[in-house]
Length: 442
Image (cartoon, rainbow, N blue to C red; front, side, top):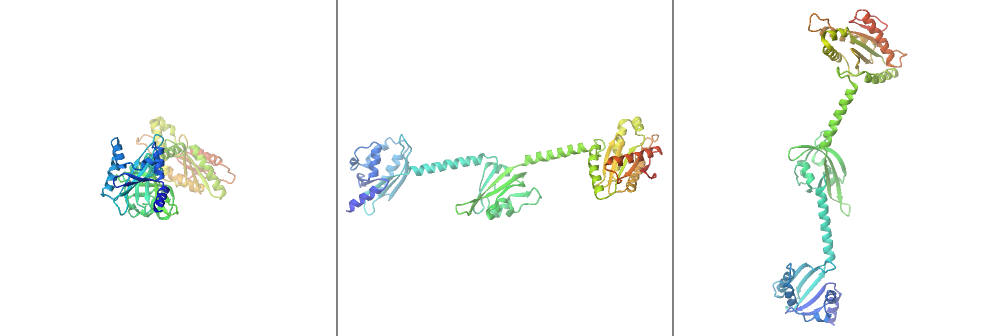
């Protein structure tokens, strides 16, 4: 009854099992052993009983190419000679049709030195899964190391476990530390210039709060002493229960991009300035002046504020060019423009109107107030712009001033009145300031 029950138990097992006596001879096998033998070219299943298993292994060891059979034989002998209670070994046993792996386990039957159990368990599915997992890990690591962005992996405590090649290139090295040592990574918020505290790093927030941060612009001091600008992102990793199990940090070096953006911005700013200013004097050009003046007139009319315009030119400018050449004329224009700027507020507009003519627009300013400024400019020009040659004529300017009137719907009418006043200044002897419809100030 017991023997029948033991046989049933053996046959219920999926492992290929043989029972050996003290000499290494097979005294019993289960059905799984018989099926495997027949499937692999064996004879009648009854013939396995009585075969010397150790001798069979010794014959196979003679043709052993990789040492697997010899290792198994030595393990079996160690158990049978009492040198070990059990022996365990995993080995390949491939057929022409498929790859297979088995686990050999040899054990001494408890309480006797005459009965030994040899079991071969098919572990092909497990090994295939392990191999597949290893290949997946290999590919993921290869992807990780190939990515052009820095990738850092943290465990659930916030300790940095790994940084890929790109990440270490960005930082000029690596520090595998926990959140309490994040201060070793030095960074500043690009928007404010404020230093990033250890607990403010995206990685620390991901571990502490489960926060996801994407493309935070920061400036970093690398471990090799260089400075870079990077996009810094961090995302928490969660286990099946939803608990935070770690985090991934992504760094992208945008230093070159930021440099290019800065250079482009500076170029565009220069181009905008060149499109708005006069090359020689640095004053606004006529076109840009009219754009700004239209806005100022609209504001003045809407809020019933005063607005004044001054139009002036250099007296006998042609004589300066004829006497000293165009270089002398250009220098006179530059010097006068520089003097004018010293008398202006930030809200005032100053432009080269054409040739030796300049125009000024004074928001929230009445004509007489603008005329006072024009007079100061005139006096400074006449006092300081005297040529070095004592025989040459002094440089002077004449100005016409006009203010916004209720019927003006554009700057043109104001300029027309200022031009009439300038003409009067010329007629009355030059080197003077005249307000439209009023008397001379000089």
